[in-house]
Amino acid sequence: MLSLIFFLGVIRFLFISEELIKTAVSPDENYKVEFYLINGGAATSFSVLGKLDGPLWFKKTIYYQSPMDHVDVNWVDNHTISINNQILNLKNGNPYSD
Image 1 (tube, rainbow, N blue to C red):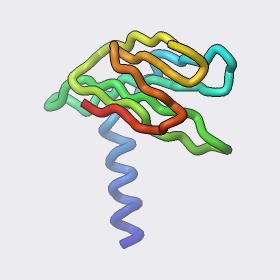
Image 2 (spheres, one colour; image 1 turned 180 degrees about the vertical axis):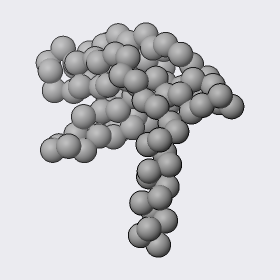
Image 3 (cartoon, rainbow, N blue to C red; image 1 turned 90 degrees about the horizontal axis):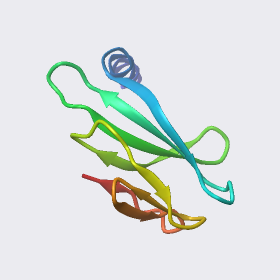
Image 4 (cartoon, rainbow, N blue to C red; image 1 turned 135 degrees about the vertical axis):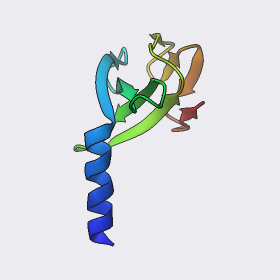
């Protein structure tokens, strides 16, 4: 079982590329969201993935949209962010996926 998990992780690393396209920091600097352009290869479309920095090295996926190749980000207030016209309240912790 452990070798299967390792194998799937290596396959994902080799064939799915993530490119950092934008970083958004909240006005009070308590939240940092990094947006990645995901390219799954010739048979898939581009996607945008947003990851919220957490404690230590942990990151939480808060946004995923496919097909999409860009991201428009605006902070509404210290804990509310608008991503491609989708409003997310980071205090609630509810992710957006399309």
